[in-house]
Image (tube, rainbow, N blue to C red; front, top):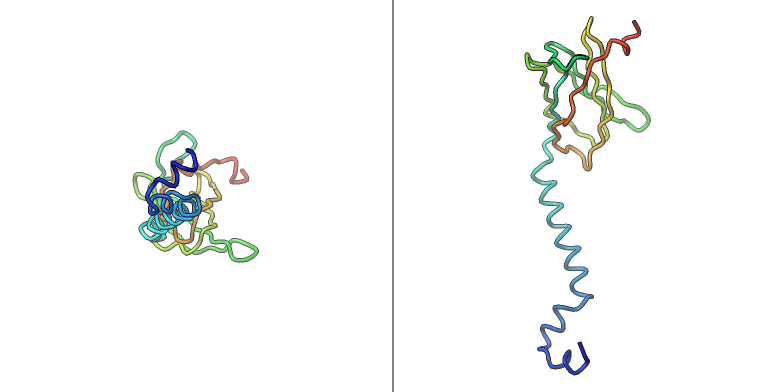
Length: 137
């Protein structure tokens, strides 16, 4: 676009479609969308499933939520799995957690879970798989 064509446009269009307006405006829109996402997904819900080495659901496994506390992970909460192997925690206060599951005679598992923000709601895509090799037997 030539200088003459640019000057022929109305002043408001030249101002609105300027990179000094578009870039900060785009950043502002991204920030608003991100904050809306966080506001609607920050209940602290952590859900998942526990399965055995063959992929079958494990009922009655003890699942623990571990929260990073400056230098180490500390146990925040504990629950038992349901008949379908599912579990849920409703009050995760952190963004850096670990989940562990254990059932006597079946095995144990522990996985790190890194969240984007504190109290982010998450449903694990992959189940915690109990392995007898990790029990020390």
